[in-house]
Length: 432
Image (tube, rainbow, N blue to C red):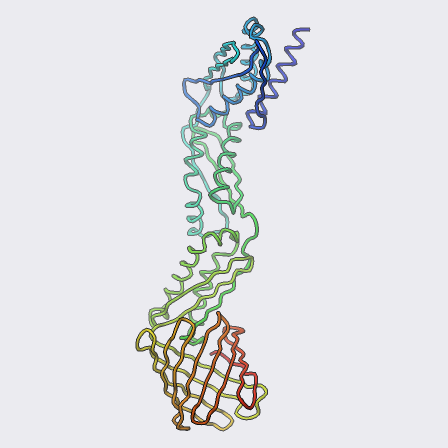
C-alpha cells in the first residue's frame, strides 16, 4: 500500500513540475504547529544556467517541495528524508531535459530547505543569432522597428546562452515569454512569433505581424497660397512615393512615429528642384487612419503666384473671367504685386498693381489700383482653417462693396458665394 501511495505521489509531483516549469502553477502553503510551514530551495551547477532559467528551476523545486512536504511533520520529513530526496531526484531527472541531477539534499525544519545540484550533459549554447522577419517593409522602416525593439538579441542571449542544447526546447518557452513581454512595451503595435533552432550556435527567427488596424491607402493633397497648382503638380509624384511607405503599417505605429514620418515626407518634397528654386517652406500634416490623409502646405517667402479661372452661376453679365496674380515679397510681411484679369465675353483686360500686408498668419489686407477704371480697391482676406477664406473688398470711388466666402473643395477647384448690394451669385473657381 505504501508503494502505491508513493507511486501516486510521484506521478502527481511529476505533473506539477511540468506545469510549474511552464510557468502555469503557483505555489501554496499553510502553517501548523510542529509541521513544515515554509519551503525554500536552491539549484546549483558547476556551469550555472542563465539567470531566468535558474530562477524558473528554483521556483519549480519550491513548488514541488510545497506540494510534497508542506503540512507534514518535521519528524516525518526527517525519518523519510532519503525517500523524499530520491523522489525529487527522479522527478527532475525526467523533466529537466539536458541536465542530470547529481544530488538532492533536504534540510528538515519548520522552514525546510531543498538543495538540488545539477550538471549539464552534451553541448551547450555558446552563441545566439537573431533574424528579424518584417516582410514587405523597406530597409529604412525595418531599421526604425529594430530601433524600437532595442537589445532583443541580448535579452534572448541572456536566456539561452549556457543552456544545454537539449534543454533549449523547454527553455524556449521561457525565452518566448520574456521577449513577448519586452516587445509588448517597446513595440505594442506588432505581435511576435519566435522560432528557435537549437545548437551550439542557436538560431532564433523573430517574425513581427501587425496588430490592430493597418494603413490601407494614403491620399496626398498639396496646397499653397503662394505657388500655382500647375507647379505643385511637379512635386506630387515624389511626395506620393514617400507617403507610400505608410501602407501596411499599423495605424497606432504611424501615430506614435508621426514626427518621423512627417520629417521623411518633408525631406522627399524638399529634395525636389522646385523647392530650392523658389525657396519653399514645406509643412506636412499627417492624419493617421486606415485611409491616411497627408496635406502638404507649400509656401515661399519670395514670391506669390496664382492663376484662376472663374465661372459665375446666377450672374448674366461678365460671368466668366481669368486672373493672374504675380507678387514679390519685400520683407517678411509686405508684398507688391500685379493682377492681370481677362473677361472673355467682352475681351476686356484689366491691369491692377497693388500692395498687401500680412497682419497675422491668417489675415492680410491691402490696396490695388485699376488703370482702366482709374479707381482703387481696398481688400481684406481672412483664412479660416485649411479650406475656408473670407474676402471683403471696397471701392470708395463708386461706393461698391463685395463680400465672399470661399471653400476649397479640391486642390484644383473652389466655390465662392459672392454678395454685393444688388445681387449675389455662386462662383466656381478653377485653381490652376
